[in-house]
Amino acid sequence: MSDTVFAPTLADRAAHVRDSSRLAPPASRARPMRVALVVEAAGGGVAVHLTDLIAGLRARSDAEIHLIAPLGERFDEAMLHDAAVRCDSFHRLPLRRAVGLHDLRGVLALRRLLRRL
Image (cartoon, rainbow, N blue to C red):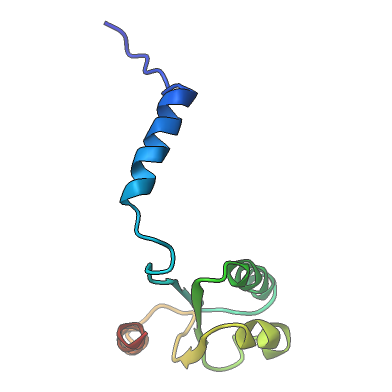
């Protein structure tokens, strides 16, 4: 008895890919991938990462991108204006950095918005 598990051979993996490709729906009928980028802070390094992420997702033609950011100064409009324009929708919600009872308001607003998207 051995606890060693061998990876499938290349031939086995190729056969599996061929079999599973018949089960996948054609790309023309598949729904687009929907991505909601929800950020509490969108400035500095986060803004740079968001810009890169949105550009990468936009390169995938069937991605539907929704950017959800906080109201107020925690969103760097100068850095993220072009990235927000490339999104299918852009929303601002009452999100705060500090944890507290006010989070309930933000969570409920986020829930309503995600259901609409």
